Every structure is written in C-alpha cells, then in structure tokens.
Length: 279
Image (cartoon, one colour):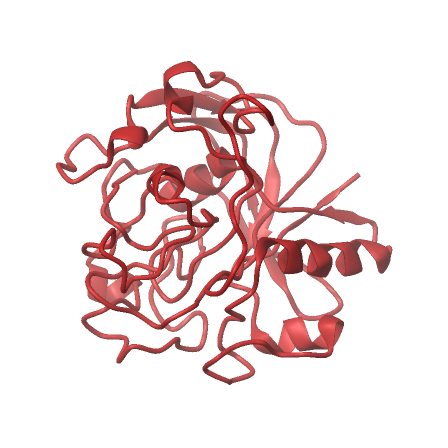
C-alpha cells in the first residue's frame, strides 16, 4: 500500500517519515523501527502524539476464493461492546499501490497474496471504555470513552488480548497479520486512499492534533471505520526489510525470528483495533 506515512501501523504523524495520510503496508514502519499495526493514523505533518489500536481475529478454516464475497457487518459483538466485521477469504495485491509514487523501498515489490481463511476484525478501533473495562487503567493522552485507546505498547495490547481470551466467550482473540490487516483495509481496492481523505480519515489537516471518537468518518467498502487516520494499530508480524521479495503467496505471517526480523517495538503511541476468532 502507499508508503506515505499515513502513520499506518506504527509511526506518529509528527515524524519525518510521515507525509500525507494514506494507508500503507507496515513496511514503512518497519524501516524506521516503529510499531506497525493494523489500521493507520492517516496524516501529513503532525497528528496526535501517541495513538493506536488493536486488531483482528480469525475464524478457523475457510476456502480460498479468487473473488471474495462482500464482507458482512454487524454479526458479532462481544461482552464489552466490541463489534466485528466478517472478512471473506480472497486475493489481493499487497504493497505499494500502483499509482502511488511516494512508497518506501520495503513496500516493494508489489505481490499477490491469498488469504485462505475468513476472519473477523473490529468494526472500530478499540475504545478507551472497552480498554478500561478489562485493564482498569487508561493510558491515553486525550481522554474520552468513545475515543480510541492510545499510547499502548505491543506487549500491553497482547495483555488486553489475553484477558479477552481468558473470558472464555468461545472465540480466540489475536492480533491480525499484516497481510490480513492490509487485505481488510483495502477492501478490494488498489488505491492509496479509501476515499476522499477528509471524508474517511482524521489526519493532520483536520484532526486539530488530537484523536476523535471512533466511527465518525465514512467506513471503507467493507464497513471498517478509521482504517486511515485517527490512530495507529498493531499487527502480529515481525519486520524484515526485504520480506516482500520472498514473502509466501499464501497467508504470510512475517519473517521468522532470527532471519533479519525483530519484534515491532512497543513504546508510546501505539494502540489497536481488536479482533477475535473461533477456535
């Protein structure tokens, strides 16, 4: 996807790496050693400091489909009010969008990827109220129950997920892979943006340098809100600068430890869109 630092998974919009808000694969974040995540914080020069969210969950099993059926929204809601969209299996082109001239080197080469299992991903970024319901604390800088939780590390995101799984509601929660996140964020499109930026994202030009309640902008074609803008989100992958050159074509999960990979760092400014899946 576009490399322009839409502050997608893991780079604050105030950094030099950020340009104009747009989605981009976690590759850019990797190059700068920042946490890549699921959704992105679309922005151009500056955005709220320290933002992010949790990610998706997978349903076990599924049949690969060349042309995925439409995603289905509104079917799932857990005990703390998190809603999910069902994402069908399918195929897409991962990496820099074809008409985007601002991509970073590690967002290439563009390559076809198959997602062979359906999964569920959060309709919205995880809100502060949902986080507090499990964690009993709120690390976010800009407080607000319906604002996305932010300034959380990847380890803290995993702790949140562990508590969701401990509740035993019949689903298995986890962070999505980078490929799953980008597939859901693109929603069948190959453009740098999900739509006119002001309509789909909170970013430098309209955010007033702060987060905003989730779901106020238009969703993407599959019903996911804030996949561009507002806050950054974590994914499960490790980072490898040349991973796109040898990434598996089917359900890639990122480079294995010890092969040029490193865990996406934690630290301030990271949060997430949570997801869950059935065992």
